[in-house]
Image (tube, rainbow, N blue to C red; front, side, top):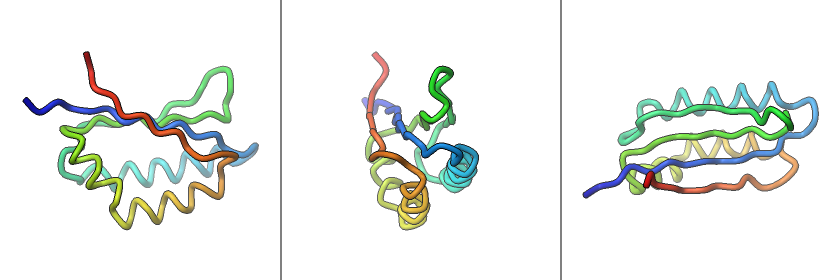
Length: 97
């Protein structure tokens, strides 16, 4: 049985760069909507720490996520995102229990 996976990426953005990061994440999300296996996604902001932004996406399978993870357009946008961050993004892959 194929199990869907959820990808949670936690990013810590430099002060004053939140809007720019959210813009790039929306751009990235627009690109991934057409990706095979993509189910849904959300962009979330920590209520207590506005510099912490989460991207949560649901994929039909881990293989579908891995295919998107290596896509050139994703990597190009991710490199633009990295310049706005204070640390390396934290990526978590999980399945529902």
